[in-house]
Image (cartoon, rainbow, N blue to C red; front, top):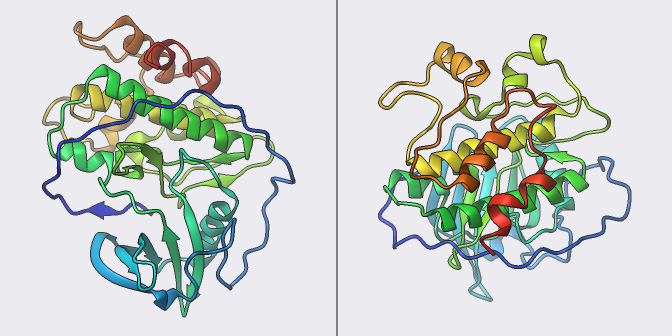
Length: 308
């Protein structure tokens, strides 16, 4: 569920330089597990029961729910509380996905509670808001900052691919920033656990890939993972340009314009001020044919490796 965050004044934005690469071994069966109505988390929950949390302010609000900044009454630890009032069949799948994720590149879920018809997620608080907030605030991103951001997103996607999870909605409002300047992937409302190649995304249209919008031409296969790469490339280019990159300046991204911009074979041009590294990175992400598009493993090298 995309959430519209309130625009607010922010402190100067900083993005941390990424840590060294690491290898992680996945064990166990990655197939979907049943969802329990009791509070759950990958580890023991620091919040039990839910009324341990005191609501402080609203961080974001959408048609399906609300995100609150909360404080634990006993420990004074701050958390984000995401309360969803939507199709329980869909959001219980999100809960199931969040239960199995444990990565420093993904916003942590500490517990899930069922509260009457709601699902309540106790989440890691990302104090600096979203990348969308930063773009709205007119922040200027250097290539060093963008490469750091790209590194963290790609590491998160690599972890998800090992878990056979397609995020399906990579976009600035789903990339959150903590007080250390670390960017992490959030919001798994459009995500799916896949077996084989079947995947259909319900993500945000302007960040969708050509194969999602023109299935008759491009067909399927393991296109979900390639779709996350496409969306990451759009985000990187948006950070560099300071605006959504696939439509003209001031133009409204209506459906017809989006179809043309996303599905046509024209290459998106990086301004001459951009380095060959960022230009090559975006080219590999925004390859129209998903079979020729760069993989996460490939993209973790030319643009981001040189910035470590």
